[in-house]
Length: 241
Image 1 (cartoon, helix red, strand yellow):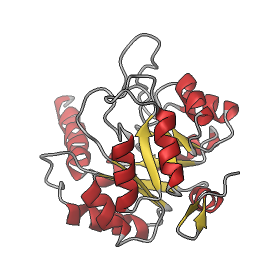
Image 2: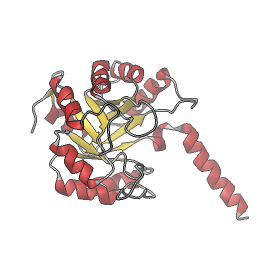
Image 3: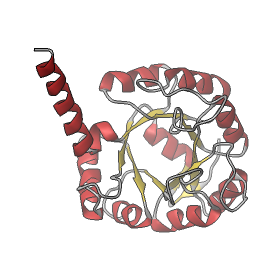
Image 4: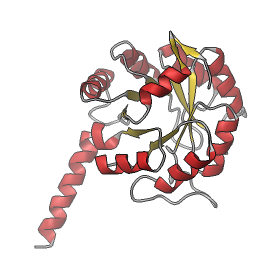
């Protein structure tokens, strides 16, 4: 196992800290009432108080503020745009996320072309040179295997069901447990279950399928979406009479 360092913590130490636990994604989209760095810091602090073992955050300002306020392992990313490869798409983005304080940099590791023509392996090499780790966000089993071969330290199912095109996995109602199990059976690096995990039972099922840890975002940190779900459920019940 790698002995790369983040501060005084080895890659093995960070993985051990995440094992079997809950990572909370503290993000809010543009236009959302929660889209404020101070709100995301408080969300991260609340997640820490509630027992999270790690955090995931988007954007340099949020990453910097959360890294300086909460002492949990932090998976940072930089969403640049909203189409194609936009989750930490280039080496430049990845190094900026590291500089902001993330010990783990999450990046799109799908087989789609990167905006600057670079390869995912180049991003991994650059982050490793700083002592950081890389989480590969993938959408298929083949992408996860390739990301691990390229040196990714963690492989997440983040993009399963969200990448269009032939041969892609369909969007499952809940987490893509089949993909979690397939990856866990094929690669040696930890598999992170992320995407459409809405209940503690689904999170536990992801661990049972072979996930190293689980990332939950919307079900915990998106009051607008949570309220909308409850409101829709009540409206449906009223319509049934």
